Image (tube, rainbow, N blue to C red; front, side, top):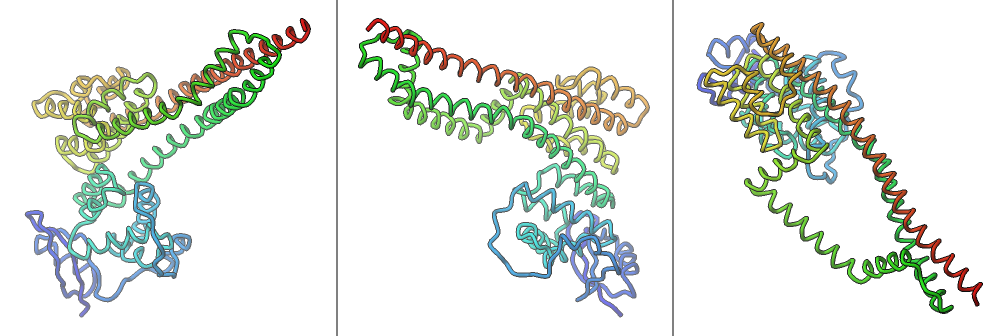
Length: 418
């Protein structure tokens, strides 16, 4: 009779590992359930079964090369492609433990392979998938871990991973739009800086020397430009060191709990950028909360998990106070309004859904609204930014050109008078 190794949770939530004899995997699961255990992974000893054609769509993900090249440090960039890969394997009917075992030996990407190996080692020690994810804080955000934990608790891990991947892809698309829209203004700024240095450090000194040799007087605009160039040459390094020290101090201050809270609060007050941060955080919160609730997590626990998805500590504190109000019996829409972060129109739509007794559709509608608002606001804001940068560049170049042209006319007048 085949033997199966398993990892499970008992009624107290403790991890249990062992082996069990059964005719097949289905019978093994039934035996574990009869023992009041919640199976996390069940694998036939010394065998990994995969249906025919189950891996036909993953030739690009896997490679038979099992060598260990130098691997860069794991970071957040690995999360999306890795979760996409494991989601596809789960959609083929492969269990999460089997998927990680397979990925740890056959993935071609070194970082993903290392991550899969680390996670598989954790599962072999009897930990659940969410516990293994929690051991990789540099890769998986706390909100991802909470959602995976909810998926395991409700037996809906495959759908949860699908929603996580969709949410991460949506956030990646928003970041891509920001980068693409800001690339042109940044290019203009770099060109403007290049022109400024060319004029200040190359053309102006020559004009100044020529006028001095002819005994001409420089116009006021040219004198200002030359004084600016001299100041940058003589004291620019001091300013650079000062800026570097200020940035270092800000980074160090932000790492402290109190500094992080105050920094995040100030960030929300910055015109334009503060609104993008706020709306993006609300989008993340509502998506996470709706996913948790539809997977059977109770409201208070779901709110606590959704709070951990917020990277802005100031907003997290406000939502923690809102959760306390919900515990005291306040309606969820009223608690949301008390944070001061929600748009009235979005709250009105959510309130309608709340009155029906099912808040999940209202949360989904709110998520869609904030996704649309973010997209529109980003386009509008970046339009203003692009226009402002263009005007600033034209004004800067115009001032320099005026100073040089004034000096040239002064030179011509000096030569005519001579």
